[in-house]
Image 1 (cartoon, one colour):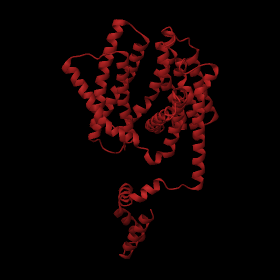
Image 2: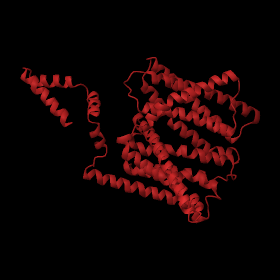
Image 3: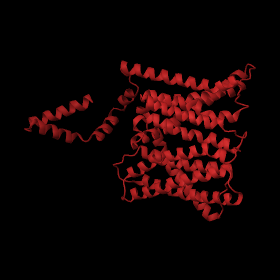
Image 4: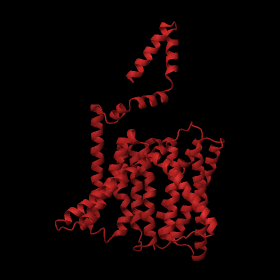
Length: 423
């Protein structure tokens, strides 16, 4: 900034000596220097070494104190999450024997603490904190009051859908008073993507740590299997969520765009896979194999497609014109829409043949929810690419649709167990 200021002053002095008034000389000098984005890019090229130093430059004393407090709180909550995983063992509930209980309650070991972390950081009003706590309390009642059949379908569905419903509660805390705005919800989407990336990196490091732990202790005749399976992995997995959230908050100014970068890499690849799948479907005339495992994988693929669309939107300048990547996104969304229609047809066939079951009904509902999102997303993408609509309309649609996922997940948690006899 000092060099830019000196250069501007020099240009103003030269123009003033040439006979221009001071205000005229200033305007001409600024015009010659170019816009802010161009100057920033030029400065980055010429002084990349300085930029790297600025990324790790020591903050002020006040900033250091705030960062230390933030880190202490986050790591304290991470320890609390790790301890919470072992609290049920005090009441005779063991991880290897009571897997259903731990699966249903996994969300409550982590998400209330994560919500509390953001409530503290965003200084939420006590009334808002109270309402968020009530939601967690009600969810805990539904997760534990129902008489589930051990290892039944409804218990598995509750364990799968409860974190989805409660993730919206985390989003409300994260956005603070901005949840009702598109920007607030989009910031939460960005956070979710970065959290996933950081968590995967931590998990990879944790896997290496676990492997070394096993090798080292086995070399001296000690079997660490019980410690690793009952303590290290479950406690570490819970605490890592809080650590990852803290890393996203602390380092977002440095590598905030990691998820969108991965999006630009994988969008063409997923589009190619979906197009190839549809072509193979037409050529072979084969139907989609809708067994439980394949159906879950198929739905996850569609969720990934929507995630790619969301994170590309999160990093896009709404003022820029449509380009090749936007056309690729249209191909991705339309291909996903057609693939989802094929899956929906196959699910309908199985239901008509074998009747409704918890898994088939949940799959049908999830596909309808995804189909509605993809259908209107395809329309908005086409409008944008053809110049008949702004990209902000697609952003509003995607961020506004988030509560629909949470609502469907809540329906599965609350309604499905009694509707299907808790089996």
